[in-house]
Image (cartoon, rainbow, N blue to C red):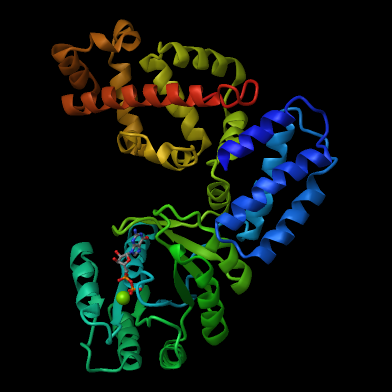
Length: 439
Ligand code: GDP
Ligand code: MG
């Protein structure tokens, strides 16, 4: 799709107002993309007509081409369709907050239980208790217990001879006693929605009064996900959705449909099998993903609002010619930080996920203090010509900055990678908007 859209964008360049014909042409591509991504066709139809209405005849902002303007509207409307703002997990007035994980077998409930517990502990400083309430699937309890061991996270289990309702009940009591502030109940699934399952989930719900019932949906199941979501919602009243397996090559159209039929927010996205592969769901990013173009626009917006124009031009030139120095690097870090967390920023770049070595430039905020110290311990010549940095110079710098040689080495490596990345980024911008993203 990205290619096709770019064709349409090119055609539209150099006009002053968004013309109906242009919009029509672009929206045909958008429509196809949405259908290809498995979005329900009624949803697509309404969406396309909404966007057309909004786009035609609009004055084109100085800073954008008509094509970019239409894409901006498409992006905004798509974002709205998926809930607009990012939606957070509930917190009970009085702890513990009780979260029930529900969904079909294989959707990722157990995996997500572990991920969510880890997320709550790492990002919110909580102390969750995981509850093994799937007594039917062979080895389900073992699976959660193994996860618990790996993550050093407590698991409540009463084996498979006690009813899930009773397990849930006792788990809450235990959580209160041990002052856990979240209880995450991993329930059983079935291959299809069935009455026994719903009855049992309903009973658990009655007993534990959950603050959050999260429906775990496999994003790869496309249109099926819609029926599942509808069923669970009608029967249980879900409060949110976790969309798993978004790391695959699914376009994620299910995200739109699921949100549309349940009218509950998608709260998290599962991005892999590992326990740290859970992300808060960002409607805006998902919109871009569905359109296959990365968050180019928001990145442009962010960059423009916080980077000084003059200086940016200078930097852009340096990046192109590969003359970046450590002083630029320092300044760059400061600017990038003023835009928001670095890893978030990197995520917004199209193709960034695939870039090699990206992990190494994820900069911890605390590290930045060290980086500053290291750069400041370099001589002017060293800052401008990193290749000067040999072993003895590195030892001197490490000593001067109160760090270590491995830290200095790491910085040099990060610097190289940043340089490479910036070169790619400035290349990527070529042929886009005049004076576009100047990072
Ligand atoms: P449950 O039956 O709903 O409890 O599903 P499980 O948690 O046991 O997960 C089923 C399979 O899906 C396992 O092999 C998981 O590793 C895998 N899985 C779960 N979430 C994700 C995800 O976000 N990405 C990928 N690639 N695999 C996932
Ligand atoms: Mg399970």
